[in-house]
Length: 126
Image (tube, rainbow, N blue to C red; front, side):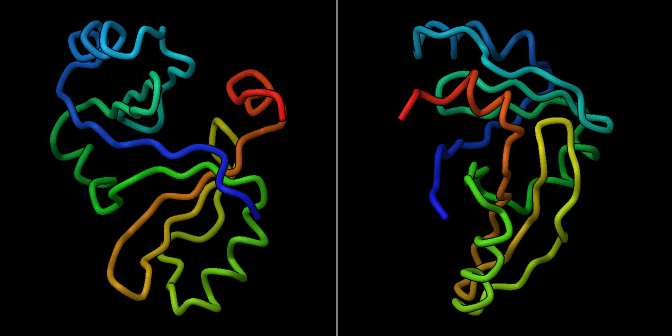
């Protein structure tokens, strides 16, 4: 199991107002933009911007980062071995599969295994 990318999560009321500065700072356009339930998400550089009404954003605020891995099943074994608790089981999403886990130290992370097409488009070739 390998970590492929880590995103810092940014919370905003308005995605379109948040993106121009991040595009300027990173020198990149968003490589991912989608709606998920009642929030909108965009990834630019190493930022994952989550926008929507505060009550909707709060549903995801327990995780401090989003981490893309190459093998979610292998990750679960590692998490269990390290005393972590899966708080949201593996679930299909628009970018692939994800889970949320609370590490033994209390940190909460969203882990995602992207679809092969998305991984090939966003990640540098090995």
